[in-house]
Length: 160
Image (cartoon, rainbow, N blue to C red):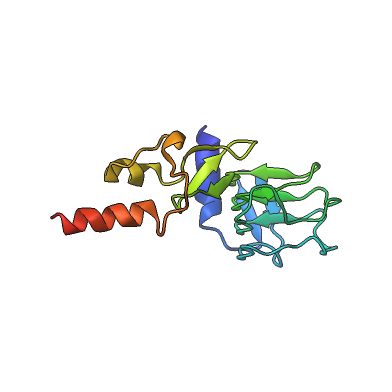
């Protein structure tokens, strides 16, 4: 546990190509590390194999989006945002986020299960703070005109 804490502290502030964690030195790929690839599809890339990708965002809006080539191998993702990203077999994810979420009829992102059924809102604390139910059965059946948290915040501000 102590090693993990040290690992994240050291790597989260390091921007050099060589990243030292304890006695190990990792050589982060400069082309794909510390970049924002949000919403981008990289399935046509031929230069991803055998890379260490550090601190990049590949997040997508749709669960299980294929961002990388199916035949990509030996890539190590460290401290990356891989939310809603399908990672092909033969690759490693360390210290990264891999949440599956989907926008529901309340205009909020909800963590979803393997069948894309909602489990809880990503910003659960905000729902609780605003007195909004975090039970998936309470998601409106019809699409709201605006975010439920935005509407509730406006309502509470008016009633002050």
